[in-house]
Image 1 (cartoon, rainbow, N blue to C red):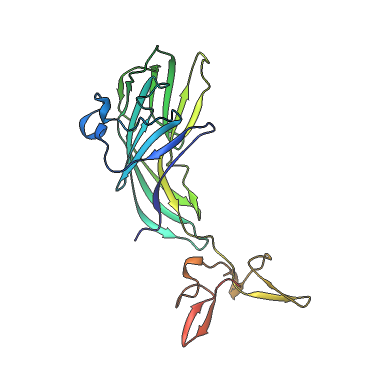
Image 2 (cartoon, rainbow, N blue to C red):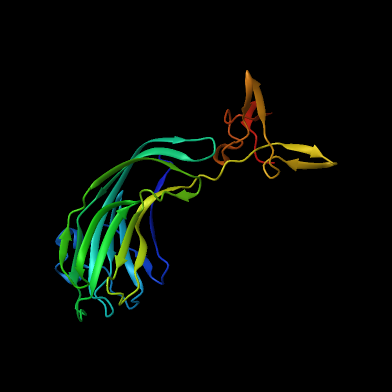
Amino acid sequence: MSILLIKGRFGSSGVYSAVEEYGVPQWYRNGVENKSNWWGPGTDVNEAFYWSLDGTHAFIQYGKNLSGWAGCRFIDEALTWTNERQNSDGSVDCDVTVDVGQYGGRRTDYFKGNVPVVHTLKIGEQVVATYSGGTGDGFNVPANPSRITKHLTVAPQSYSDSIQLYMDVHYPTGIYPDAHFEAGVTLYNPTPPAYIPMATRKNGQWLNLNDHNGHILIRHGSWQDRSKELFTTQRHENQGHNRIRRGGKWLQLPKM
């Protein structure tokens, strides 16, 4: 069973929000020319993103056929990862492949006039697609590169930024403010951070090592740190560096 989870992450410094849909969208199955295949529109112009996840394949729509939107954008991506390895601090290493599909745009029924715009899509810091033209243009741009491979270390209870899909929107004339969005899926590590078990007696009080910068060291030729244990295996049999005998079993010491 995989430790890491694939999750959508959408956000910006503005007021825009994202709506999660389900399954493969009609615009992907049957094309984007027919606006009835698009997600939305709803009534909230600030619901900028619609997205869904089918297994490890994600589908993202930016914009919709609603007043206030000149164009709508479409992209899909897939994440696969192998060789997961959990470290003593709760972080997880793995090898990841990101496959990015074609980036496309179509005009809405509410288009009033083209405004110059430059769209840039990135996976982490790697540019994978750009389009320079007008806000109501119709276009299709193949991702280049369309595949990115990376080795990752994802910290406990954190997202990976280096495989996050980002969208930058630049208006050369300055008629609108530029925008930078988290606009796709990435990997999330749900593992709680590591802890240090046991406690020490100081000035008549028991102080747990975890909250008081304690350490547990073992002498094996040189001093080796055996302090950290994973929350996910506390009280599990034959787990961890530090154990206690209970009911005839050796159990990982829990946090004090």
